[in-house]
Every structure is written in structure tokens, then in C-alpha cells.
Amino acid sequence: MDLVLATKNLDKIKEIKDALKKLKLRIFIFGDFPNFPDVEEDEDTLYGNALKKARTIAKFSGKLSLADDSGLEVEALGGVPGVFSSRFAGQEASYQDNNLKLLSLLQGVPLDKRKATIRCAIAISEGNKERVVEGVCKGIILPEMVGSNGFGYDPLFEPEGSGRSFAQMSLKEKEKISHRGKALRKAKEILEDWESRLVLGLTGNIGSGKSTVARMFQELGAEIIDADKVGHSLLEKKEVGESIVKNFGSSVLDKEGKIERRKLGKIVFRDKKRLEELNSIIHPLMFSEIKRKITFSQARIIIVDAAILLEAGWDSLVDKVLVVNASYKTRRKRIEKSGLLSPEEIKGIIKAQSSQDEKIQRADFLIENEEGIEESKRQVERIWSKFAARC
Image 1 (tube, rainbow, N blue to C red):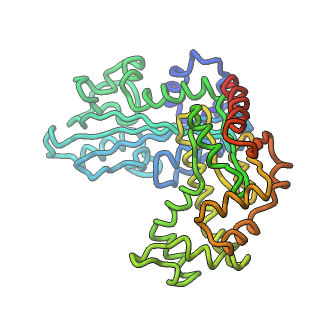
Image 2 (image 1 turned 90 degrees about the horizontal axis):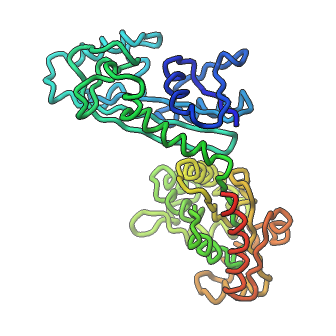
Image 3 (image 1 turned 120 degrees about the vertical axis):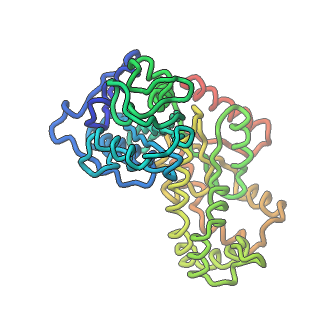
């Protein structure tokens, strides 16, 4: 497997290569490519910067890419420099410049008030398939630079219980306890299983029994990302609520001033244009949140449970599509039996979803959920055995 390191920092390259040397990887660096791009680190978080770099280089190279971003958080300075650690003393600052600025800001601060944390976020990207892990190391900032090894803030940072700065340690000693060493060990595990991890999209029209099938997969060991729950949590966000009220009016609010989904549903399921208006607000946010959950998941098999997986284009996030099927008569009977929706709401939801036949045509696996729980469970177990063997 090929891996491109998304950095031009030779010190980082040395540490990463050393940590991954036992894996069966062909590691490429910036010097192996003409016109290797510089990526601006303008995100608000370390993992945001790491993901941006990994995504950019994966797209540029057409290969699996790994990037990191690290930040020093000094308690006495309110968490500064954080995401700006590499350019603390300016855009072109040297390690020495950054260390001297830090010392000047901490001048006169006693040792017991110089607590600090270094974080490292590592992102791995291959198109839509992404993972992010973090490593954390706590310690103190020394009153002067000590040691000649390492790089960055290593001469000033003394990990808890070590009695030495990172710059006084060998690379092997540092790797055992450092932020980057911890993150790289997690990344190593991910890379070992990279080609065996699966993200499956589970879909089916209302009343098909999709949620029941999702629970079956969960019982077998899959992690479920429920799109409905993601959507509900987004409606709780202040900025989302404000946008919906602006577009649909305050009549969609309950007594506590929160979005009431039933009231909103009565508006949008009567009018296709209003439904499209709501979707334009909420669907991009749901896509981003589902993708974030996939990226940070530690599970080997993930199921994205989404009735509108195909309609919303979220199938781009998954490796395979599973469709749960049942006849229209059965689906209608199940919906009416639940008593949760009015006939008008049922009609509107069915109209908003693409036909079951369209979903079946795009399915990699079909689960017939017509003949009872036990038969559905047998189908789920057969499918699971194929995926579990691969993972």
C-alpha cells in the first residue's frame, strides 16, 4: 500500500517514518512529486488542519495520504498558542523564534503555573474514506531551553514525570510518551486495517422495517449512525433553529421556543417547494455531521441508517448500499399501526421519498422484510458473515 506524507517538515517526516517503519507501506514524501502543493493551515482546529492537508494531498497524488497538525496549549496563556503553534512568532518564524516568544510571555511565571498540553491530530484520507485520531501529552514549560534533540517546542516542554525535556530524549524515548507518538500508534492500527474497514448505507422507504434491520446489525457488532438522530440534534442548534424560523415562521416553535418537528412536517410535506427549502438548510449540515462521525469512528463496520440516503446523495459516503424492502401494502399497514403519523403526513412522506423500485435498482444487497423477524434476521446474518470475514 502506498502512503504520501502531507508535509514538507523533514523533522516530522523522520518521526512519522520511524513510527510506521514496520508496516508494509511504500512511503512517499514531497520530494517524490513535482509541484507538491503547500496547504494553508487556516482551519480553527488541529484536526481541521490535518484533514485539510490530508485531503488536498490525497486528491493531488491519487494516493492514500497522512497529515498531522500539532499544537501547544499553555494554561497560563489561556491555551495559546494552540492552532498557531508553528507560526507563533510570525508566518516565517523559526523554532527558535517561537521558543523565545513563549519564554518572554512566561517571564516571571513560577514553575507550578507553567502547565501545558501538546496535542497532535493525525488525519488519513483517501477520497471519501477518512479517519482522524489524536494524541495528547501533558507537562510543563521550562524556564529555559534544554537539550539539542527534536524540534519545535521540544527544548522547553518537559512531559509529566520525565524530569527531562523532549529535546533531551532520544527519538525512541520521545515516541513512547509524546503526543505525536501516541497519535501515530493509533494511526498505525488504522493503516493496518485500512482496506478492511467498511461503511455501509442502509436505506428503505417508510414502513419497510429499516430501523429493525439496523438494530439487528448493531447486535452483531456494527456501529450505527442514525441520520434521523443527526437531524434531530441539528434542530436543537441555535443557528439552525433561527434559519428555520426565518424561512418558515415562528409557528413551527413549541412553548419552549424549540423547533417542533410535527409542526414543521405539516408544512413541508404538503408543499414540495417548501420541503426542498428545508432540505437545502438541513441536508448539507447532516452530510457534514455524518461524515464527521464516520471519520472519528473506531469501528470496523459502520452502518449509516438513512431513509433518504440515495435521495440526498449520501451514498457517496458509503462503500455498499443495503436496501430493506417490503410491499406497499405491508409498509402502509405498519405505518398506520404505529399511530405516530396522520394519513396526510404519511402521504406526504411517501411522496417525498423515491420509489422503492428505484432504491432496489441501486442496491448492492437487498433484505426482504416481508415474512417476519426471523427470516429478516437470517438475511442480515448472511450479509454480515460476508462483511465480517473481510474485516
